[in-house]
Image 1: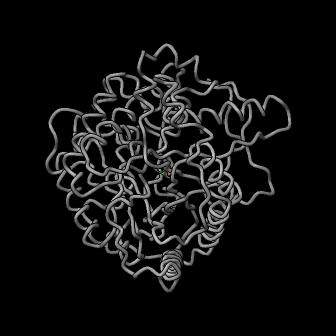
Image 2: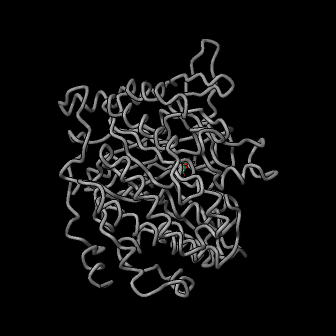
Length: 475
Ligand code: FCB
């Protein structure tokens, strides 16, 4: 069975074909967010705790002791946020459902108030001609499930499938685009390998169990979504960045290769080719059962790519023998310290195209900047505009080189809770004054809106597109 799947998802797939550069008339311009980072309303209407609520309560974990209790108060201000998206002119919005909002204990009784919030959001998006893209999991695991072992407990594949079924049943009449996981490599390495993110574990067995159970959960959820939502268009969202060795010695080169297998390959390779990359295979073997790889490698419709900047890797005494080092001094960096290397984005798109042969949606790209309101009440974020321009140009180069890119979503619509950096890093096209919750579109919002309008015009599309539903070309 595994061999059959591996064949149908061949790494040199014949589905790899050349595409012209954008604008294609169906190219989707969008924005992305996630539940914990924007919703707030953490303790009302029956929402349960997530592992990030718990993590934020632990002393010293989050910059300035910030938490997600209020965030952007999107739970109450979603209508204003949808109106901002409509003004931007985006055709699609990717958000995540908070598992503990709809299933406060992670399984069992559903929370009607939580489900009703997403009904309201979805209906507002559809009324604004913005296609909703749901991601099932953007890191906010119900605390009640973590208490049972969370991703380390193999039973979670069933719990996740049941959660996917609930979401499919409730929203599948109006939502067709579903992603299972956002950046599983990040939340496993940081949450179970290095102990830097919730739930704060650094343990070899925990890391490998979590990786395998997340892959199993992905497969189970794809199966459920496929069977329950008519015309569903399904994928997963992977963060892929080239890993360059910091130094010139062989040890750093080995470390870079090893970290790359955890970062870039631990999820897409089993999900597409029904095998684990060499660096992980032995460590995962004890947790594998017959039939697992076939369950994991369900057919998907597209490859969701998040990309920001390359990693610079050195050896380390940690459990994978590799960690992040300093980039070369001459490479420019953003406010959060990530390097600006648009060519790496082009190369990553071409690599994903060649290896996986699926339509690609860029579901996150963007930059943190030191944004400030000026005396006239504007935010002139020219650095973000330069970044977005360079990266969208790099995407165009990749498309001219044959990469089948179907959409691009900026991270993020709003300044928000940036995990352990709290509210200190601003990634939004829209500035949020967290004291008043006032939203102020930055100069980059206007730039992005102009870009979308220009691309639509040159693709001879009507200004209000008809983005709803899945294009046949994706299937
Ligand atoms: C990505 C995450 C997203 C946000 C951006 C800046 O890794 O998916 O939630 O934190 O980075």
